[in-house]
Image (cartoon, rainbow, N blue to C red):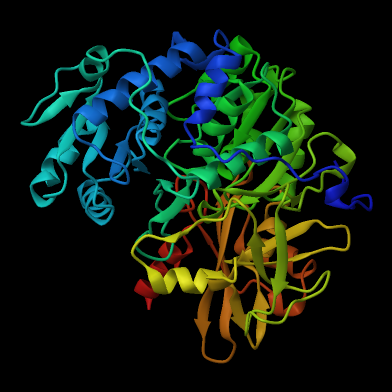
Length: 534
């Protein structure tokens, strides 16, 4: 693990791959045929083999077809991580319908928005979330079926039990439905850090290709055991679900992250692949109990969904001996586009998002026009092209035209590619701080402040200034052992380590940084707080 890589070209070890033109659910059928007795899912005290998972997917696919769910119709999944989620996802895909995952922390307003916007005809919901759906069902005339997952008896008119539907059907494959590779199979909604989320149209081909890319980049094996607490409703969690199935590996599920239980499962199952988001690694790297646990079975830890400060990765590796690699992707790319090299620590660059995935191209263009292609080391907007790129946004032709141009996805992320082929993401285009004509990436200042021993977490935003336009302000969570660290101390410490125009003009100490479930900083929340003070 180093900061300056060897000179390497990604194509030397990420050659072109073969991508079968098959429906997404076929990957499960292939796994069941090749590794029928491999454990596919482990959850709580139970497990499902690939043979059993395939049979359950067939049963639920038949049940949905019997209810009248047709090709192209949307079915929402309102569930925490559980085997039923995986069964439902593959079953919906198998009948040519479209999966639209929902965050189980959503409340009535958010649930109504997605069920309405997606035009869902059915929703699969865990028992304790059923009241949220029932509260808005009257405003959703297209919603024909509510299917409840859980041990309790469903309540409310028109609610069916998942277990009863599955038990009533045979395990044989359902009648074949014509599914094209470019048909939409998933409609995840973007995280919506800047407003209402948009539906993203992901095809069977997109998911099949990205699963194959992930397994190749991560070098998954059928003997691997993945720790999966990242939520399946998030595209990162969905990638782990699909990648694990394609490899014939075992996914060990958690409904949510809890450090002690996570460590117990790592030991009990001999976890080999550990996937996290930055808030989890920030917590673990500072967790006093971490040294008591043996992570010797883990080959590598992948961190994605948001930028990770290199200092956090170093601390985790020093305490566990496990290499941390960063990856990069987004919902619009199914999601993976980059990953650091996991097979050679000498090629792992901590501050980098890594090297391009197989069969993926990128260019960096100037921020102003988006037309001039920039060279190595020049900062601009990252653009990606590859078989994993979305079909477009749901019911949003203008947003689609802005994001997809001649096959290129304009990501809205600002960064550069160095002379060795490594990509460095600096920040979101919309979140750059404009100081006297200079562009300042908040993530750069955050990464620096993470190196201070008194900082546990941090976020930086631009605040209005009549002379400069915007000036950087930091929101800092102190470490428990460093409660005495002051604003003046942090400003002075950072000043000697950054260019003058990047000087922090204020520090506010807070109890927590507002973030999405995947770890992205909600800068708009901080900006709204600042605006309210004025």
